[in-house]
Length: 294
Image 1 (tube, rainbow, N blue to C red):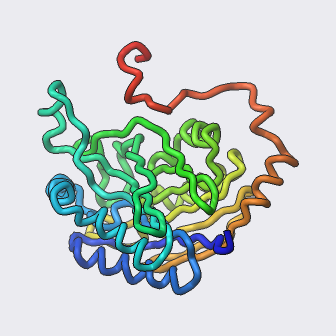
Image 2: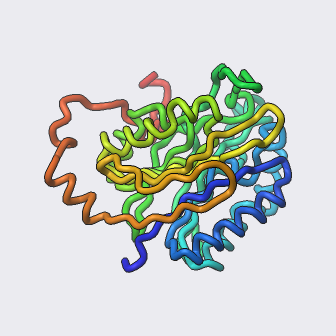
């Protein structure tokens, strides 16, 4: 395709969902003006407060307030939109209905330039950790039901491997995405200030090098509440591990051109995937494997 520009959108989302959507549209419009054909929003771009995720997931279920917005953005600006994450109601059956009554899936939706849904990924690895910052304890599993399946979406830009934030620390997921054909790894995130300044760039560059993929990290970047600060530094990395561009803090847009032909030639010249001596855990369709594999 002629347009091979991809944009990482950085935001500082707040508890005001409508204001977040307004900010997102302004940044998407900016990216379109700069010639981007695909934009990646950060994690929790619309709903940043964990306390209200279930409420908004129920609202999304009845009104499509977020999926409709993403579809409209794609159609209006004639580009592909990868919607960071939005809260969706988890799938339930009779056995786990009570356990999931207060939880959501935090999901990445991909829309093509006609506004049609092209893919969905539910975040697998949940951020249940202690961090040396003002918030201290993070426990996503209290409000989020983990996804199970690796997802690759075919696009005119290349094959997108989907992941979210804390997933970045688990290289096996990216090995699986690569095995499924991924060429561009997307990482919408809300990395904390402390973890981000220590690990954000090095993890993204490592995933690019070991998988010979472009990596786009769209992060939240600023002060959200008195106790919540995110790292920012949204970044685009090429398959050789070179940083093509990086933001600092605050709402902004990073647009860079990618070259899939370069990526594919690099894999021919250095066929490291063919040289791998070990296989990895199979993430594909884990939700369908049942108890036999546990």
